[in-house]
Amino acid sequence: MIFKGVSASRPYPEHGLRQSEWAELPPHQVRLDQLVTTKDTLDLATLLDEDSTFFGDLFAHVIEWRGELYLEDGLHRALRAALQQRTVLHARVHVLTN
Image 1 (cartoon, rainbow, N blue to C red):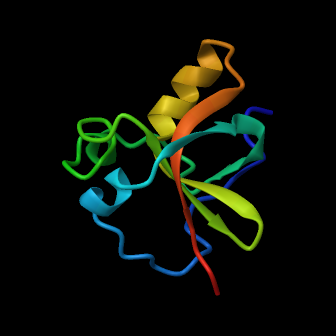
Image 2 (cartoon, rainbow, N blue to C red):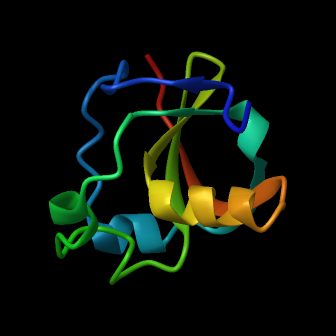
């Protein structure tokens, strides 16, 4: 399996980060097999949305919540990495506290 899990929704509370706030987080390498996706489908409309990392940030967005890593944005980047047989993804990680 590529990812630790695949989900169709976000199990964590809303974080409210804007693109400029994401950009302040330094990128880290994250293993694909430690990620739980928050989308089970790669939707073209979402991919082309101006808030998507497709056009903006070069790095995927990951939320760390309750010990799990959730891939919030950048599914296209993660799939590309997997297809290129890479096991890690460069991502900006935001840690949510309860």
